[in-house]
Length: 264
Length: 155
Image 1 (cartoon, each protein chain N blue to C red):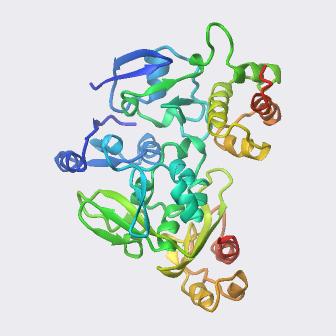
Image 2: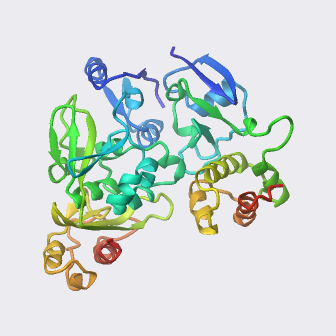
Image 3: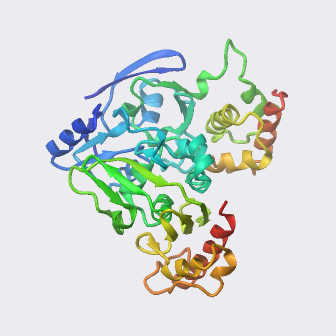
């Protein structure tokens, strides 16, 4: 890892200042992806701005019928929080199956979605539940936030502060994890509620996407049986040593049925 | 260079580090607490697990400066007054180790498990150890040791 100047701001404003003053700065949440990336020298920023000292970015609350998760809230906190387990148990289950316990004690929801790894779990949660990303500048619908491989709608100097999830009537998540990394080879979040009926797929493509044929199939009834016959095309899906595009397309169907069956 | 200060095993520790200095490097090379091991250096294997503010973390994937002001506990901090911690005693009693390389991280993870869930099932123990890799034992005796402590039969 090449050396960098480390900053530990106490507010979002200070973080933005440190970032704008740096020649090639980067924000850090929990560091669970950033630090391995720096070790491999896939990135060599001049400055690392750690959000770990910013007050008010961590914690979970209810706000106008939504569950609001602060950007620096760890996966372990989301998995065990009383509000999340009561209102959106599928979200708690998703967070509790990311990585391993020590990673879940450090990794954050804001860091995960800002990175937008194509195999990460949280993008499926945000899109599959119709969440809204809150930043220091605006609110961004999850459908507009994830724009491509490791790409998001975040602008320069824009910092995620929280994610607001509407409470679904029913929601379930199922993933087929890579047995080594626990990243999703395919993960599907299916829900129905105030954000409509949604089926969001991670791990299969370059970026999380909604399976519209499956959403239509569920429109007549939110049951696993309704999905029989609904499928996604293997065109444009990922193909690698772990799974071919055709196998991933098959897994999307299996995981979607399991997600709906698991929905509480 | 940044300075960092934290409490390690109940004692104040401070030093000058680079921004990129990892917590495990600070523990091993600055404080000479070499009980915490570096296995994979990629946050996979768990040999480097320590507690930061009471929670298990992989110290190879945490900057020393991120632990500023934190309470850090390493494997050296578990034994009290010359008495092994019950988890250490149980690993010894139940032969929960062979070569011992993964053991510091295993023990620190296991202690955090029982702090979080005092009576885990065997499945919950095995799930919890997902981030701790042992190349020798096949995990059976590690699980037995943790079960023994959970049942109040440590050591």
